[in-house]
Length: 187
Image (cartoon, rainbow, N blue to C red):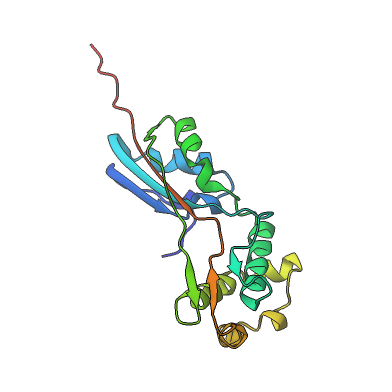
């Protein structure tokens, strides 16, 4: 299901909200968080996971001179051009506090490392690049002909050295959960 988060309206209050890789794509993450919290019951739990994309950081692909590393640069340029918030995972705790939540100090970070061609790395890279083609092209990082999405996965496999390619396309995913404060009991 694809929808605009500003248009999401729950008809009844809920006990829990779970979101993965959502706030990084919103124009105003704090406003988006406030909007979904309206339907979270007092005492309810919200659990979010967001990426840590560092546009100026190193590409976590080895070898660095591979087509896979170039594909990571393409979609990082596309994300940046599209206004995807970098390092959103690292901002989750503070956003939750700013929204009036009580986030747990137990913060999780997962850095999935993939391998190609035997593992899922090339399939994942191709999927992410496919989703960002308009932004990649608009950023000037690559043309549609350079990307050639219909053959990208095959070219990633053909470009891989005998020892394979290892890495991932961001610094990881951060997960934070919080509980919505109980309402003060009136007299």
